[in-house]
Image (cartoon, rainbow, N blue to C red; front, side, top):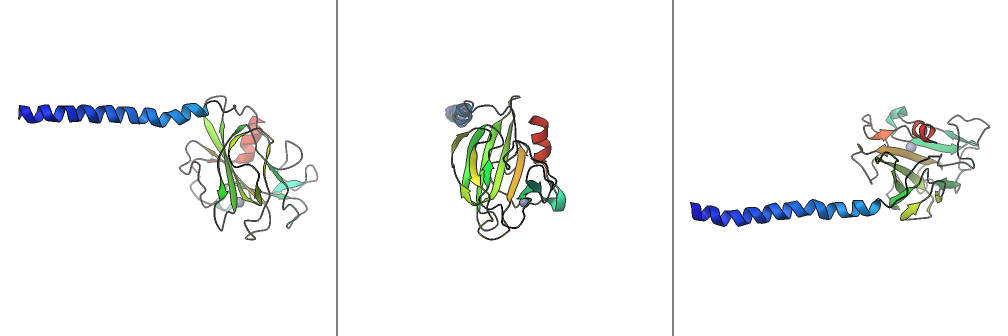
Length: 200
Ligand SMILES: [Zn+2]
């Protein structure tokens, strides 16, 4: 019995050591990301000015056609006041400093999507998602607030052109991934405009 235990002991030690080293290896890329500039200030993803209102007024040329939470919407749908497809190709801006951590064609309902990960001054992270893009202008690396990252599109003709914009916190189970855009459970998703207004 003792003999068996002595054989078992080195195996246990090996397991312990390998378990102990794995998390270290996994955390290395995280520490590498700490060089990403901090998102101190946020601004809106569309419009010539840094701030737009959600109303369809004459102030800024843009409005939010479907608010966060409306019909279980997980984002906001930004459209030009001029309506229809008049906003196809309009610039889409990074709302804050961050790093592009996803940029690809996400399929039929989405079209081109960019996700930017932002590090806040308090050390926490949020992500912003820009959906239905006509063009992706940058696929990786650091971005600055108001940097043009894409253009407004229609998900290959599925919708009238608009920007589907989401803002997520670290509770989001679909971190760095697209979901379906609607859910009655919105844990991990925040009201994008409210967040931008708070930190702009
Ligand atoms: Zn939407």
